[in-house]
Length: 439
Ligand code: LLP
Image (cartoon, rainbow, N blue to C red; front, side):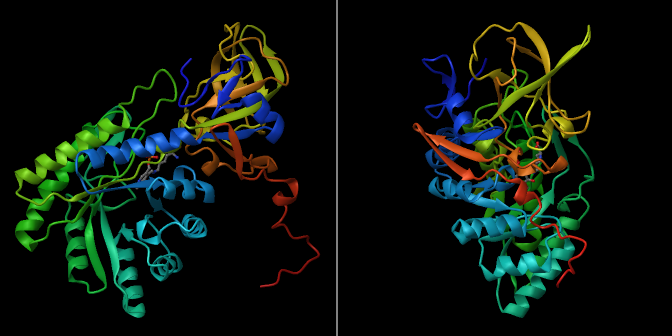
């Protein structure tokens, strides 16, 4: 079994995270429970940042907050000197509530509303990553109305799609995001931005995919972008101050995954950008990246209590837990795979193969298929690893199941950073038939 970060087996033979016994955490905070290993998040953040610093590259490491957003998480990102990528008014609001430095917030999204853009401008956030022509026009109008200038990046699609191990090179990428680099849309966007008094074009952004295990796609993307930048340098005397190559760095969910370490992504990206800048005699841009999953994914563990068991003779043993697709939709949505152990005896020999079912009223609500496990009893605690990214952030109230709390653990201390939802929370927006809705 592979343990991430501070996760280990303690003197009692129990699973321990952040210096705390997970059995005791479950007793104290209940289940299901998201537990985050804060030291590991710090380590991941430092690894990205230090590599840029070591190589003398001006950079921003922006935490892609969609992976897990909460006030405490944003405060932690601030402590670690990260920037922040937000994709909605809600994420921006959370960042403001966390008093995140506004100049280090980058606003993404393929359909930002007028209200969201106004909110971003009013709070003078660091930059807006413009995704399409509609937004380019809307943002110019808002800036003109307010007498302000927006720092922007233009998001381009370089025609590379990364699917974990595979890269698809497409002439004209079929994506809802960004301006196509090949068909002239990116160039039109660039010229519009350069001509606008309301927009200050900081540079170019691209994001090629998620859960990527090597640097091939990043290198290809950088190469394609620089070839275009060279044309833009010659035709418009434009050279970007910033090149943002997005996120997508892969993590190890199971033994099938074999990602390279964070520093290696950064080193190879820097190397390629240097090569390309040299090739076209351009100044070295700042390099920005946007890791989400690789900052928080393996730092999260979900603790569940085992409940019912169903045997389908000669077919399968189903073991049901007290959560499921309501707290982790990734297996149902992407057939994502996870590893898990019994928290009371993580190293005990497997005696059977079970499939972990959630408690939602849906056959597809399975968390793990075919998991080798010691014989588990009702009330045993199951620890599912690597749930830190896109677990809580994609959690939902299907079947009116309250969302679990989030606990940060570090150096033997636990801190609730998101409270458990209550049944009362679930009905707080409901109005009875008899009551008239007031506007
Ligand atoms: N930057 C941009 C523009 C993105 O669209 C994303 C993710 C990231 C950064 C961060 O990517 P990461 O480093 O976390 O791979 N819900 C899916 C993942 C969706 C990712 C969307 N964009 C999942 O659970 O796997």
